[in-house]
Image (tube, rainbow, N blue to C red):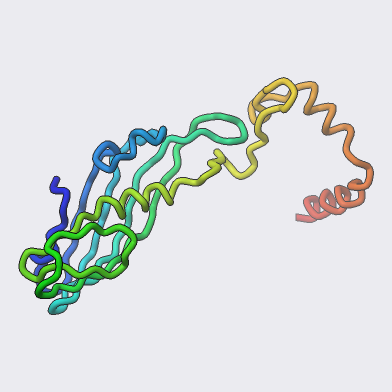
Length: 180
């Protein structure tokens, strides 16, 4: 696969493109993140004269470790991507699409390196503190047991010794659950 997206070769009207990269091609390997699947981009472009509008979606799966229970799980990454290109005379013929949303390239030989933007989209789609599920109980701070899989003496003791000031609120919550 070419490293560049040849914008000057786009036909007038709408067209669709699909790109696939390995994590190594996007320099994502050394970040300590595991990618069981390649990174894919589905891009829709609309060219009208010397203006090109591109929108798409970057998708992949990432293997992560839950920050609460330390179990491995997969995260689906789906990030939107959009940029516009102006084809002009005297503009650069090669440009790297980094943070700009609108770029200008040479009308007859313009090409864009979209890999930096794809790499950023993937990294932004990965949560800083990945959690396997919303109700993950994590590990016991005393003995290290995964509380999603088993109970330990420490967690049982903690459940029994709840702060009495929360009893009325617990009773209201219990009543609400019973009504539903």
